[in-house]
Amino acid sequence: MKILELPIEFEFNGQKNYIYPSLIILNNELTLVDTGYTKFLSLIENEIIKNGYEMKSLKNIIITHYDDDHIGSLYNFKEKYPWINIIASEKESKYISGEMKSERLVQAETMLDKMPNEEIEFGKWFVQQLKNLKHVSIDEKVHDGDMILDNKCRVIATPGHTSGHISLYFPSLKSVITGDAAVHEKQELVIANPHFCLNIEQAEQSLRKVKNIQAETYYCYHGGKLTS
Image (cartoon, rainbow, N blue to C red; front, side, top):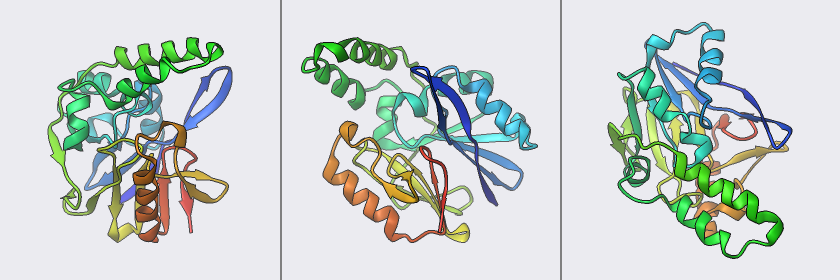
């Protein structure tokens, strides 16, 4: 088993940006963790193929949480590769499937009322981005402590950024895929976008929880991997 980070380059507001979805390879089967923004399907496909793997081997997609940069292309993946097993926490599943209005959309709409005039346009655009996300039903709903992927991966509840956020721990690889529970900045693990955390105290606890594992490698969606 191994984990690859997939550096995905894109432009946002005229600036070059990166996200780093993870690809887990186990018994010749692939598991993708998070799917980038809408229309990122081909960017991620290209990166997987560039690493020498075939898309027909993609068996699972794990979603760490409901945010447009993590679930944006999920619908397109499921549409193109209908056999894919989609895994998420029970709580996030309700938002991803459209059963409940997402916490992020509620937050974005609430913030809109208090935004200074110069930020209103971005706020409205962000709300629309969230409203445009297509709902996808979840095949496998997981909880804190569950062992998945042939018992090689432990699900860790890391709430704060969103309430049902999960990270993934691989004991045999001494590695953690953090989602947005931690981002890599200047050789440090820090809280992702504190301004947007739905519960900053929980986010701080989750960051401590992730750090306390003392993994050798942390695969961060923002900032890329951090190796001790």
